[in-house]
Image 1 (cartoon, rainbow, N blue to C red):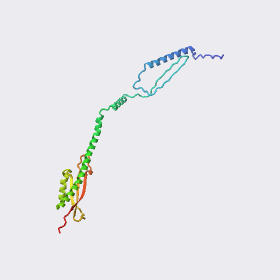
Image 2: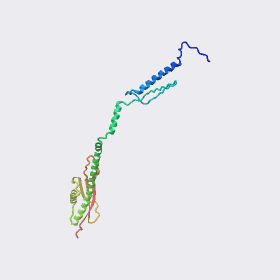
Image 3: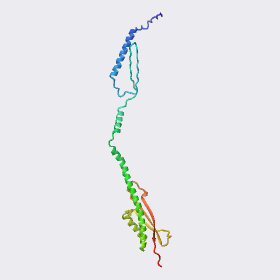
Image 4: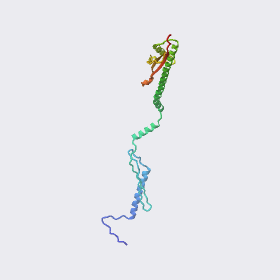
Length: 234
């Protein structure tokens, strides 16, 4: 039997095992009651509470059939403020709200569609004027040939007046204020008993696009005409 150590007078005597067990039972009961009270009626977190992660600590103390578990929660992340919540709610409602979409699309696409329509009309006017100027040049060639067969000598001024009258009438309907016709004899006359004439026409197509000033809207056309001359009298 090992020798017993003498008790120190300055140290209190150790409590018996029964007292330790009673103390442990009391601590376990108090801890279990606290856990149940916290679990049954949890306190709602305040607005300034920080919730990001939870740490769970389990303390188990066994003395025979005694077991106690204690869980504690700790939080470190911040909950969204009221202004952030209102902004998120506003953006969510705005994303789901489709009222006025048709009006916005019309306001964006209508100017583009109108501009495209006016551009198509402008191109149509240009092509019509181009064909009209060329056709007037062909009409003048026929006119000078017919007058030559009638033994009529036409001057350059008569040719210009006739060309202007043909251009402003149907089916060409060109504007006289924007049409310039110039008829002059060619510098080179290399065919016997044939008069060569240069017919120059310049026409500015009306611009219905007020915001665009294009130089390509001016049509320049030059055509050579040949007028047979009467043979000299023998």
